[in-house]
Image 1 (tube, rainbow, N blue to C red):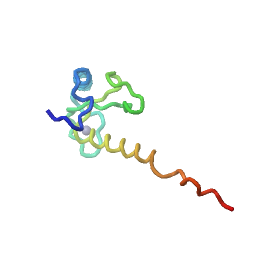
Image 2: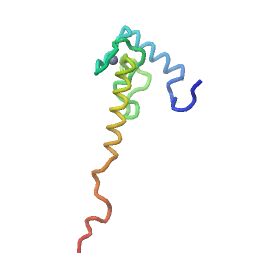
Image 3: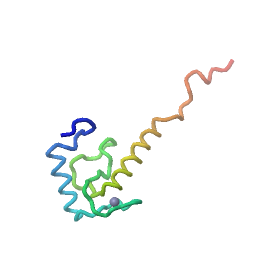
Image 4: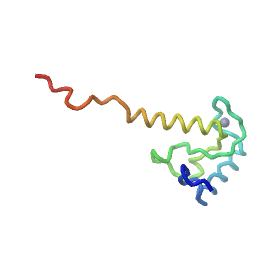
Length: 97
Ligand SMILES: [Zn+2]
């Protein structure tokens, strides 16, 4: 089993949630982004768990294909990075004589 990089995705609760989401959406990707394969094999959190979304609520899940899920995850981490990024002036820059 792959140990690193895998966080909560191997727990029984997550597996049950993922399957319930996939079955509800008939294993059809709901994201339909560029390069969508339509056939969903993954469950995506509509509301990111990191930003307070319910982790094992079927209503917070949507079926996603590998391509779309990857794109959404990348976009989310990019947004998180931007939020933390530049924007605040360096300390001490406002101390003019
Ligand atoms: Zn897709």
